[in-house]
Image 1 (tube, rainbow, N blue to C red):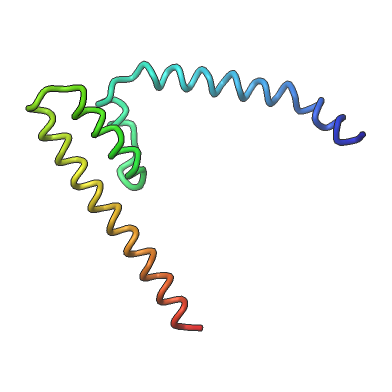
Image 2: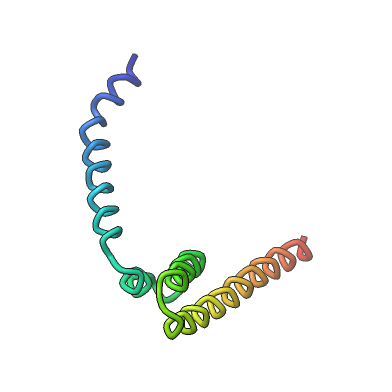
Length: 97
């Protein structure tokens, strides 16, 4: 029954984290697509950038659609490069064994 004691003692902290997560999610949902894209870090988060850029293409006019498509293209190239880099690292490690 000691695990129940730990579970009960962590309940308040867990509920606080859940409330904080809900507040953060609501704040994120209020941001526009461009604000969301701007908030992402320069490196990484490629999948999220592609997802947001595709949403931007679907929502906005043709002039910004070209810009968003360019972002998608660059992000997909980076994604492919990252995959190749991981595969190369894996192959190199396997060949050294």
